[in-house]
Amino acid sequence: MRNLFKNCDIKVFLTMSALAVFYLFMLVYQSRQVAITDDARFYMAAAKSYYSYFDNCKFSKKCFEKGTIDRYWRENNEHPPFAKLLMAGGYGFFHKKLNILDEIRALRIGISIFAVILLMFIFSFTRRAFSFHAAVFASLSFIFLPRTFFHARVATLDFAVAGTSFIFVYCYWRGFTSKFWAWMTGVAFGIALATKLNAPFMILPVLIHFFIFKWSDIKKRPFKTVFAPQFVSMLIISLPLFFMMWPWLWHDSAARFISYVKFHTNHYGILMYYLGKIYGEPRPPWHAPFVMMVLTTPLISLFSASLAPIIYKWKNESENNFAMTLSILCAFVSIAVLMFMPAPFYSGVKLFQPFFPFLAVIAGTGIYSMLKSVTFIPEKYKFAPGILFFIPVIVSMVDLKNDHLSYYNELAGGTKGASLYKNEQHYYDLFYYDLTEFFNKECEKKRCRVAFEPNGKEYDPSSGILKKAGYLTKNFIYSDLAKADYFVLTHEYRWKDYPNILRRSKNLKKVYSIEKQGVELLTVFKLNSK
Image 1 (cartoon, rainbow, N blue to C red):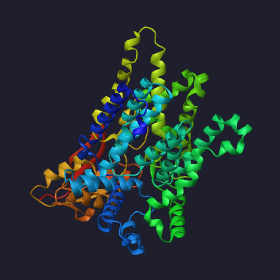
Image 2: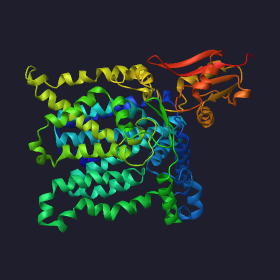
Image 3: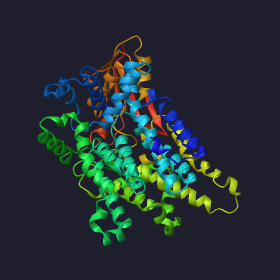
Image 4: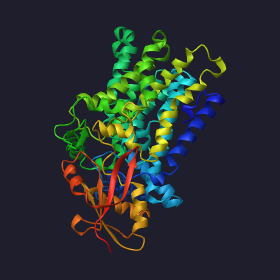
C-alpha cells in the first residue's frame, strides 16, 4: 500500500484519506438497515466455514488433508474464495474477536473495507494518468453510483470482482514504469482469478492496449516486447496463486476445476423482467445490459463519461501510457461480454460491476475537462462547482434510504418511470429491513406465520439469518400460504404467476407496504385474526 502513496504530496494524501474515510462512513452508517439478498446465505455460510478452518487448524498438518479440506471448503465450491475470505476476515475480527458487530454486519464489513481500498486505487490511477482534480471527481463519481454502493455493503461476490479486476489493470498500467507494479500484476491477476470466473475477461482489453501502446516496439523486437514483465509475472505467479488461495482444488484438482468451469458455462437460467417481457431461457436481448446501465447510472456520470473522449486531448495520450484508451477498452469489454456472449444475464447491473470503476475514471476526467475549459470562473475556484453536479443523485440516494437497487436515473423517470416502462423495480427476493421492523412490532406478543409469494422459498433461509443475528423476532415463523396468518406479496413481474396472485389479493386486508418513489415494492396482507 505504501507504493500507492509514493510521490504523493500532503494535499493529495489528505484528500485521498478524506475521501476514503467519507466513503467508509457512508458504507457502514446504517448498514444494519441494508436488506438481505437471496444469495448472501451461500456466501455467509462459506465465509463462516473458512473462518472455522483457520481457527481450528492453525496450519497444522491436518489442515492439508482431504477430509479437512472437504469439511470446511465444500460450501459454495462453485465460486472461488477471495470475496468470502474478505467476509471471513471481518467475521473473525469484528464479531468473534472484538464482538463489536453482529454476525451480518461483520460478514459484510470485509467487502466494505475492500471497497474503500478500491476507491484509493481509482483515485491514484486517475491522478497519475490525468490530474488531481480529475481524481477527486472520479472518486465522487464512484461513491455516488447507487447500485454499486449497495453491492459494496452486502455479503456477495459482485463488488469484489469489480475491485480485483480494476486493481489488476492498475498494476499492469503502473508496471510500464515500475518493476514493483509489474510483478504485482501477476499477484493481482491471481487474486482476480480467485474471486469470480469473469475476471479473466480483463485480459482482452489489456492485450489490446499493450499492442496499441507498444506496436512500434513489437515491430522492432517482437519477442522481447511481448514478454513484458507484467505478462511474465502473470505466467509465473497468477495460476499458482489461484490454486494456493483455493484449498478446494488441492485434492482431485483436475476434476474439481473442470466441475467449476462447467457450472458456469452451463449456468441455469434466471428470470429477468425487461421492457415488459420475462426472459430466462432464452436470455434477454443483447441490448439489455447496455440499456440497464444507461437507466441506472447517474446522469452526471453518463454525460461526463460520454463527453470525455470527445474533449480529451488525445495528442497527449502517449504521455500517460494511453490511460484513456485503457479505461475505455476495459469499460467496453466489461459490459460487452454480457451483451455479445452467450452468458447468463439477469438482475440489473450486478453481473458487470467491473464496468463501473472504469466508468468513474472516464466520468471524473470528463468533469475535469469540462470545468478546465470554463473561462468565466476564476482559476482558484474553477473546479468547485463540480461538487454541485452530484446533488441530484445524492438527493435520490437519500430518498431511497438503504434500498439503492431500486435506483433509476432521471432519464428513466426514477423508480416510478422504470415501472411505467415495464422494468423490474427492485432486485429480486430482498428481505427488507423495514419488513423486519414491521414484524418485530406486529409479532411482539404473538407468533406470526408468514407466507411469501411469488417466490417464497428464498425468504425462509433469509429469515433464519435475520433471526439468528437478532434482527427479526423469534415469533416470526416462515409458513406456506395455507397455514399463514400474514401474506407478503413481493411485486416481481418476472414471475408469470404474479399478475394472477395480484388479482387474487385485491380483497385481502392490507396492513403494510414498502414504497419507493411512488412504487409499491411489497405488500403485507393479514389473513387470520387471532
